[in-house]
Amino acid sequence: MPIILQSAFVTNVYFFSQLAGVVEDPFHGLFYTVLMLSACALFSKIWAQGSGSSAENVARHLKEQKMMIPGHRQSSMYKELDRYIPTAAAFGGICLGALTILADLLGAIGSGTGILLAVSIIYQYYEAFERERY
Image (cartoon, rainbow, N blue to C red; front, side, top):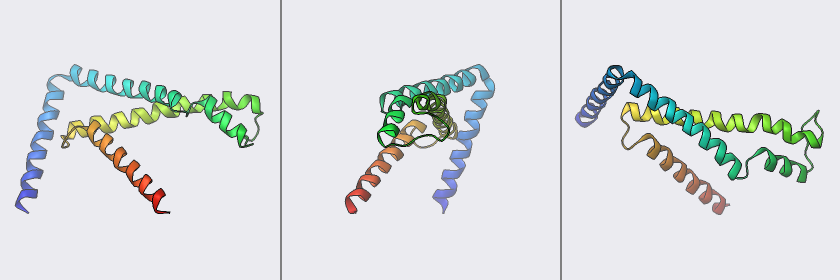
């Protein structure tokens, strides 16, 4: 129990020291936040295009599976998907960027980016293990 209390105390001290740094230099904190969120949104949109999750690829897959969006023709399916997929990708990137900023601010062991990377790798191994099991 003493090590848990000591760890909580040090974490709180580090958190408030991080907040003091942001209060002393708000431009630096704002610049870091805007840069991180913008870059995450941009790279998420680029990743969606390159990974096969673009509106064009999804429309093609739906057409191959003879699926349609109710109320839309096959030719307008791409336009409809293109309205939502890039926005959803950017929003997902912003959410991950905000999670990373929060983890960095709270002083998580490692960086927020490292934690997200570790969790995604472990989850991929878990999915592969589950597929092999069945």
